[in-house]
Length: 524
Image (cartoon, rainbow, N blue to C red):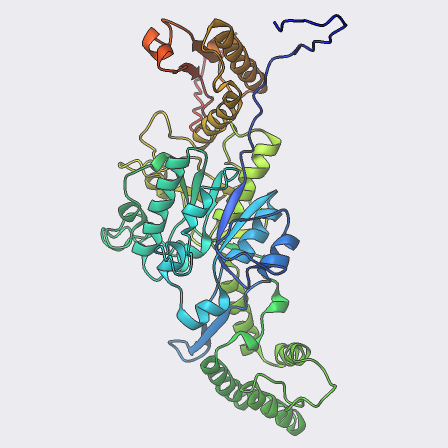
């Protein structure tokens, strides 16, 4: 109490309520990948985690969608054409899927631009650059250490790396980063996750020794990661963005020749006037222009309008072109699922709580899995001998496409097997840690210990009431201990240590529901 020396009236305000623990946000991802640009006005944003609140924010800072490039080759039977992706990027459409599935605020970290990839190709050093003092280059995980709000790491473009070794080396570093920060998890897309499992000991995409996920992901910090398989067919890329202009120069030449052959084989033959028009149109495709506008006169349609009109003309007269355009659209919509899953996490957290497993739910924008997985085939994904579970996305009769797994990569651990258990404890740890900052340098005495114990207990009681903790009574759901001869010794107090022990009974998902039926003797 202060000593008063001058007569008068003095006001003393006393706190009526104790400090409280505020629950930290649980679903704020950072998306790493390639963007069209990385600049906010005149401020460069390359390599800098930047907060966005909507897809409009993303477009303003990082630009629009990429233009996929396709190659084209005659099929084996020479009767049709086979399209293949020559260049693609996943980040833009992944962020779009995140917001479509209920995502909120997020961060984006551009590791490079489309132009840089066109000049240099996709490099592993884009995701894990070596320090370079000459250009003040900062590695992504070094930059992310300065953004404590992030709780999920998603990097769809890591699957574009040519080597599975490079892809999973990045994810090993991501898992280590998550362990260091103790506040976030990695959502991992499988390299080559659109291919069907061969179950070959060497070449299987999940467990193969050459490029398999389980072989390459390592064995460290696995409880901080979750993986999803397979990739999905989405409808996020609009048909209006696909035309012959998406073909490479070589692909255009193949298409023009094939269309000429189709015209010659048409029965009945089109009129002479139509044949002239179509032949001119096919020849003009090589210059990426429709028939009657080469070259473009000044003041006429834009190049985009011209391409769109040529595309529509071809769609009306050529079944071959219709198939090629449909194939290109299908390929453009084949995307890894982790970005959409980040949105699922955010929506589930907001509607039900982080303690609810992000599973048995659909994915907005998803049409079908690229690989069909049966119940038998999921067994090795969900419960492998090494514990490195991969969560399946399946089409279930009467349910449609659903996320059918909720395990971390540490599936053999009773503590960290489930995603919601791992994420709930991360939320509790960070929330209580932030609240405890108020007691740094406070007297390490009984009054402080009681205040700390009450503050944490009130927080956990609220969580228990919401269903985050298991137990018929609050006393069964958690315990908080702090004090001399309980959590601390006299030496601890002399050395400035306040030790608090928190035990919680987290809820686990009912992954296996067993119904038992038995006939009973009828009573006459």
